[in-house]
Image (cartoon, rainbow, N blue to C red; front, side):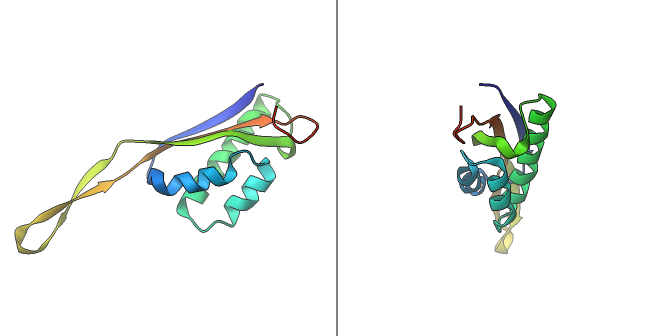
Length: 118
């Protein structure tokens, strides 16, 4: 089965916040996944929507079919590097702040005639 994918690395979204959005679209038809992402009120949904559109564009360049008949075959989030920052506290103290990043991968594939994944 041939598929096209898109990878977004070092995005400033925590993996634990991006994972529910990714789990929501995995295995869905592309038009349905785009509609769900458009109406999801999370910052990660905007990022994943743009990434999904990129994967669909890559699939059209590889001539895998039209976007209406594609499914999200693989989608996952991995942890990226964590930026360490310091927040000043009272009485001269400081607390550590961890700004987490993610590596997000979305792959789309053409579905067969029954509407199932290949």
